[in-house]
Image 1 (cartoon, rainbow, N blue to C red):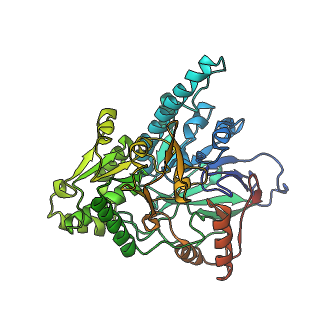
Image 2: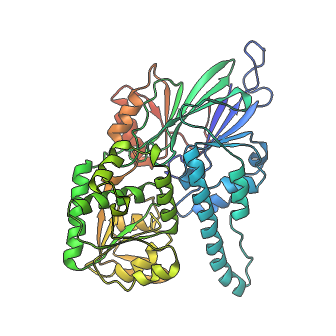
Length: 480
């Protein structure tokens, strides 16, 4: 029998990784389960762990023999918690194909290079005091050369295009509606002389999100791995969300303060810019200076523009109508700050600006510098527009922290913190249940990518609809 082992994103949201070992036995061969060697070892996802005290240690753990014995790697989309350790896998010896969609490949070129750059800077900073203290110097998990080798291994497949992998496995991607290129992964896997169909949701999109198409419904599977990030709640309706957002912007302007929006560079930033543009054309955006202060988010925004044919045509039409067909008028007050000097200049602005800056969970990037100059002012608004993992600065703010340690300085949080969950690019509980309920013939369900409370809530909610979902544990191995 073929097996699946849960190696990440179990009991937590990040670090996605699942090992599929395909048996090499034909039907009627007489070999028992588990005898002989696997015909194929396939890694589904290779994500980095983010947030939490153990993330650094877990990310640094060697892949061991896995890197050299894998035959195939399949990636659902370009968020680092799903793909961020790919260059480390390659650094440790993996040389096989990495399967993804064209949109994901384009994002990997940006995200992995940015990740390598940040790692190099962090290690350089850490090694300064290590050198003075006479301690062993650190090395980054990977560097830009590893990223380039990784990108050369990528093989792309369009939605709905079947691809045959090693061991007779067939791969088909379907649109997950989460970010550019994001996919639901369908794998037809030989197992015990039969074919078992595994469907991995990846990150399912929120149908209310701007720019993305709705997630595709799936109906046939023997086993379903489903994300549960927001398994315990629904998002606020989009109309109410935008109204709340507009009121926060108005209050900040009236108080003479700045608005800080921690930027998730992929997807969320582009959606926020879309809604700012629509508010501007409705005459509801009084701020005249909007800064996109994230080189990575700028590159991703430009990529979205180049790949606009893959985005939701209705949303693009509404934006085009509002701007009278002139892309230069989408958001006239937008300024792209690509270099450090331009970013530092923003800190001289005491009020009336909207600053979208990386990183989304506030654990690094330029947003920390803007916190340093703004978060102690009561006129400042911090708008949290995405999921904040446990252990991150963003989660501390959401949970009501009155102090925040930023760049070596203890800051008193006087700014107003607004969590606006309706902008989430993840499906909410009701949407997850609807997606799960579309499957026929009662496949087995396993809930991944969720914190324990969210997973248990979704498990209970699914049970009321007749779906018995399991919550796996780390290194649990199941037969397909």
